[in-house]
Image 1 (cartoon, rainbow, N blue to C red):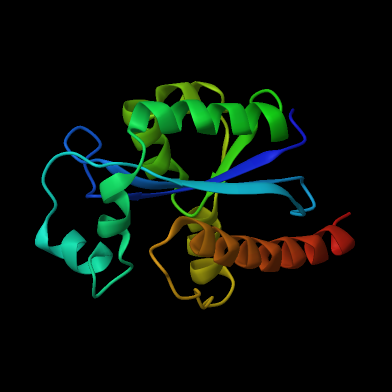
Image 2 (spheres, rainbow, N blue to C red):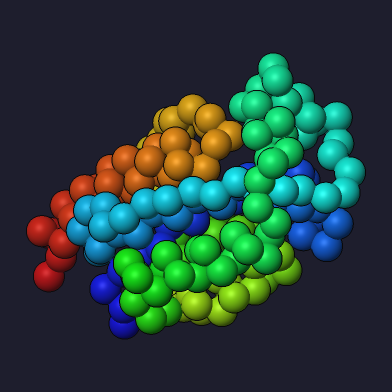
Length: 175
């Protein structure tokens, strides 16, 4: 098993990886203690339609991401940049971590295939933990979403550290 987790967050123009584009790729590489090893994000030039909902979220009144992406690198170039970043900081086949790892993995497979193929088949999904704790232990408050990759990843890591702390307490009482 790798000793690195590649926390990835994608901002996209919608929910369907077949018709929608990636706007931003954020990666934070951590060790299993959740200490940050390296972080980086890239803007991606988008193609295709943008729904009214996404235009509001990522337009001038929202994150401003759509305007920033007007002069960004194409997805193929960002795929190479992200692949090199992972190779340098995460080694071979890091675990994919994130708030919605399944969603991001679908977009990676479709839009950034080299980055997708550099990751382990395993995932550490924050939403899974949130749902389990929320229903089985106690309601857990989620932090605000910024709809920008790195700020959202830092929020996710803070939340994951809280879960790690709670799970660590279970280890102390386990037989």
